[in-house]
Length: 67
Image 1 (tube, rainbow, N blue to C red):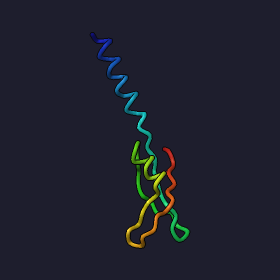
Image 2 (cartoon, rainbow, N blue to C red):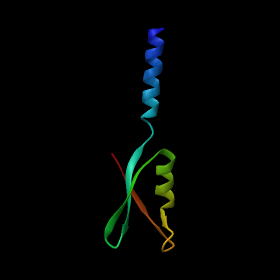
Image 3 (spheres, rainbow, N blue to C red):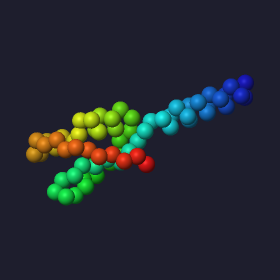
Image 4 (cartoon, helix red, strand yellow):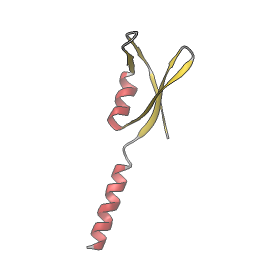
Protein backbone atom coordinates (compact mmCIF):
# COMPACT_ATOMS: atom_id res chain seq x y z
CA UNK A 1 0.00 0.00 0.00
CA UNK A 2 2.85 2.40 0.85
CA UNK A 3 4.49 1.71 -2.48
CA UNK A 4 1.26 2.47 -4.34
CA UNK A 5 0.85 5.80 -2.54
CA UNK A 6 4.47 6.73 -3.20
CA UNK A 7 4.17 5.83 -6.89
CA UNK A 8 0.94 7.83 -7.22
CA UNK A 9 2.51 10.87 -5.56
CA UNK A 10 5.54 10.65 -7.83
CA UNK A 11 3.32 10.42 -10.93
CA UNK A 12 1.35 13.52 -9.90
CA UNK A 13 4.55 15.54 -9.40
CA UNK A 14 6.02 14.26 -12.66
CA UNK A 15 2.98 15.12 -14.77
CA UNK A 16 2.46 18.49 -13.05
CA UNK A 17 5.97 19.57 -14.01
CA UNK A 18 5.20 19.02 -17.71
CA UNK A 19 3.21 22.28 -17.80
CA UNK A 20 5.83 24.40 -19.60
CA UNK A 21 6.05 28.04 -18.46
CA UNK A 22 7.98 31.03 -19.81
CA UNK A 23 8.37 34.78 -19.32
CA UNK A 24 7.04 36.70 -22.33
CA UNK A 25 7.45 40.17 -23.83
CA UNK A 26 6.89 42.14 -27.01
CA UNK A 27 9.04 44.86 -28.57
CA UNK A 28 7.75 48.45 -28.81
CA UNK A 29 9.85 51.53 -29.67
CA UNK A 30 13.10 49.60 -29.13
CA UNK A 31 11.96 48.50 -25.65
CA UNK A 32 10.89 45.11 -24.31
CA UNK A 33 7.40 45.34 -22.79
CA UNK A 34 7.10 42.56 -20.20
CA UNK A 35 3.86 40.58 -20.20
CA UNK A 36 4.69 38.19 -17.36
CA UNK A 37 4.71 34.42 -17.15
CA UNK A 38 2.46 32.20 -19.24
CA UNK A 39 2.04 28.42 -18.93
CA UNK A 40 0.61 25.54 -20.94
CA UNK A 41 -2.20 26.47 -23.33
CA UNK A 42 -1.92 30.17 -22.44
CA UNK A 43 1.76 30.13 -23.42
CA UNK A 44 1.01 28.44 -26.72
CA UNK A 45 -1.82 30.90 -27.48
CA UNK A 46 0.20 34.07 -26.77
CA UNK A 47 3.11 32.78 -28.86
CA UNK A 48 0.80 31.95 -31.77
CA UNK A 49 -1.62 34.89 -31.61
CA UNK A 50 0.60 37.69 -30.26
CA UNK A 51 -0.49 40.48 -27.92
CA UNK A 52 -3.32 42.76 -29.08
CA UNK A 53 -3.13 46.29 -27.70
CA UNK A 54 -6.68 47.66 -27.82
CA UNK A 55 -5.49 51.25 -27.21
CA UNK A 56 -3.87 51.47 -30.64
CA UNK A 57 -5.54 48.43 -32.28
CA UNK A 58 -2.18 46.77 -32.96
CA UNK A 59 -1.10 43.17 -32.52
CA UNK A 60 2.54 42.63 -31.51
CA UNK A 61 4.65 39.51 -31.99
CA UNK A 62 5.37 37.98 -28.57
CA UNK A 63 8.71 36.45 -27.57
CA UNK A 64 8.80 33.91 -24.73
CA UNK A 65 11.83 32.39 -23.01
CA UNK A 66 11.81 29.22 -20.92
CA UNK A 67 13.13 29.31 -17.37
